[in-house]
Length: 381
Ligand SMILES: [Zn+2]
Ligand SMILES: [Zn+2]
Image 1 (cartoon, protein in one colour):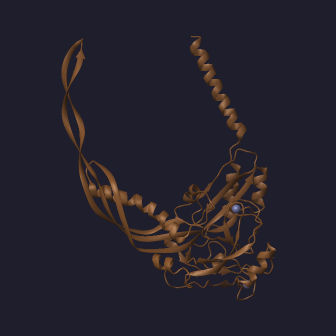
Image 2 (tube, protein in one colour; image 1 turned 90 degrees about the vertical axis):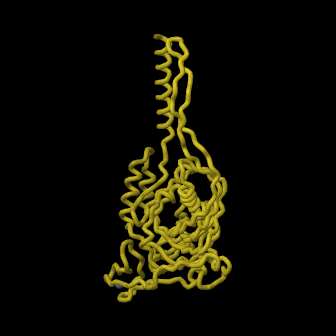
Image 3 (cartoon, rainbow, N blue to C red; image 1 turned 180 degrees about the vertical axis):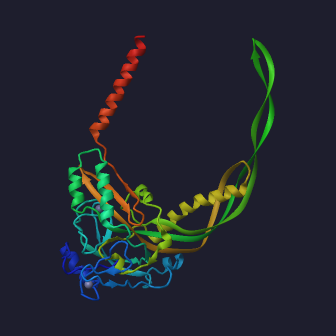
């Protein structure tokens, strides 16, 4: 990802400034007045806040292309796939991100720790598409404030943090994979049948024979092949956020992906992928396995299915590397990190809410008193 530098805002990390400048970062001056512009969520162009000129974003007109998985793996140095990226690594959580000078970089957007690391240059696969920010900062701030109000502990520090702009716009890295999958399986098909069963019951002390209907299952060995076509299996390429929160941000409106343009990143942080192309496909396989299993069960049929082995061959694998936008706050409070996230497309929010220890202790004490009263009541009546 390429940096955007605004002359009016000096880069906060001295070291980064020199390195970033030498890497040929891009600025987006207004074509009319020359002011340096940042991307405003919801816009389709860089609108100048001073002279109101609309500056077009130069994106490729071609649809977002899928790239071949194996040729990308075998040809890692292919220049059209790769780009030089300067990233800063958080020594606390390991997140690597490129920073835009319009963003305060004194705290890691993922864990809230102070970033003391220096920038390093890396060759990474270029993102080819993204979903631009749509939810505006003020909207996300509104959700953030509502969330703070809902917290149990006295949130005065957190409110101060929120007011200080503790919400950062971050592009999260993702992979999507398309693949054909041919699976061979072995297993058993279970068909239910009913039987009349005789049994002995006792009535007025006398043994009598009765009948009842019972359901039993007959199992047959089966084997076969199924085919699945997968489109856009989404795999997060970040490890900086807990998986469950990343999942809570879903769904994403991937049908609105646009070809990558540096302009969309102006004013935001972009995280570099930490799950590489190959590891990402391993995760995609796990997602696909669930769907393949459903297909196999349908193929076996019957009332019950047992699957003893599945052997899947994946072919025509293609991928896209994309960036998806989120507003993130990572707040440190008493040695713990509390994160709050907003899907910057849908406004969907999720977060870690701190619980007050004394309120939990109080609830436990109340429960114990109730139990003690019940025991006393039973013993004395
Ligand atoms: Zn202007
Ligand atoms: Zn961090």
